[in-house]
Amino acid sequence: MPVFSALLLSSLLRPENPASFADLIVTPSIQLGNRTVNGENSVAVLWQTTDQEHPYTLKFNQGGKDQSAQVGYHTIKVDNIAPHRVYIAVLKDYKPGQKVSYRLESGTEVLYKDTFMAPKGAKQDYTFAVFGDCGSGEPPQAEIAYQTYRLKPDLLLLTGDLVYNRGLITEYRKNFYPYYTPEVASPKNGANILGNTLVAAAPGNHDILHRALDTSPDALAYFYYWSQPLNGPLGDVGNPSTPTLSGADARKDAFLKNAGPNYPRMANFSFDYGNAHITSLDANPYVDWSDPKIRAWLKADLAKGANKTWRFVMFHHPGFHSSPSHQGEKQMRQVADLFEEGKVDVVFAGHVHNYQRTFPIQVGEKKGKDKAELAKDDWPVDKSYDGLKNTKPKGVIYLVDGAGGNDLYNPELNGKPELWKPFQANYLAEFSLSIVEIKGKTFTLRQIDRQGKQIDQIKITK
Image (tube, rainbow, N blue to C red; front, side, top):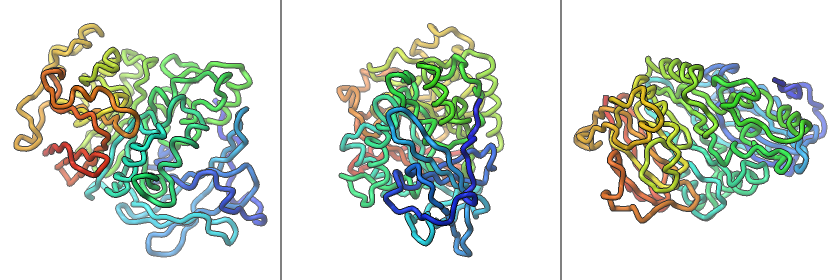
């Protein structure tokens, strides 16, 4: 596996020849970074520039003196895109739950400045937003981005299909960054949430399933533009449970050099935030969730959250939903037993372009059954839980948060529970996002539509 041989410290760059704003291809975004190396108490700031030798400094401040972050970069070179650089600055030693101001400088020029909330500590209250299936370039994408901006979550979880249709560099530039980094926030423009909100992203089928590098040399850009913990189970190139590469050897080699250690390990990862353990999985159909090695990793990872109040899982393909669309893709039911055993509270998914919520689902006699039995919809559920009067679910709640901007699926099921699966508690084919508030042992979820109206709410207490 190649490493980032091109990674350079900013101190090695020439101090002359400062950059201008025109050299910025993408303004900074706040991401988890590789906490496996950087430490749990760290975040990463990423930005993209032209492939020119300019000095960049990232300074951050929490009400005291400026501190300079360590800065490095790697260069992206593919056939159909001009070479460019992805810079990464690692921020450490901040105080949890306090605002961090930062600015990107080149020489004496300030190219960008913003603030974000430092990740919350285990005893602090926090909020996080969830949506997916967003990078379509359609007007609802901007509206959901704007509502997210207005809610000001501490953390944003994206449930996959970040860009349509093939996960390309060109699609990130057309359908992703313009909606989440505009200078002026509005329902028409979207909002700059990447520069002031910590974001974690699970991969969807439109992100990493297309791997034909001969026809799309800039595919698999997920592995270029995200920096997330490299603590997943699959790090060996060619493993059949990873997005294996297709194309000429030269293009494969170029991709591997560009992606560095992110590919393929970053498709699965986990991290802690506040009093929660959050696990992000690759739910694409090539993953064999009956593989003992992968199951053992997931079981062990969920066990790491034993000292946390909350355990959440996110991935793209939902195991439980009522839409006729994608009904044949139930592969994630294979790990429902691990979710129950690992005391997962809520699972967030996307893929199906609407919002859905199940009753708390139990495994019961489904444990150890084959795929055909798991595909049946007769799973035990806790229908006494309503999230209002009864706030103590007996089972795992599964949400579909796939209404982030692309065309909605199956609105004809709205308000018709007789057409829903027996495990379904709510179904709303409306553009929307989830906003979750955590106060110690209380979880409150509100579903917010593109006009800012609340369309669903539940509470969980412990």
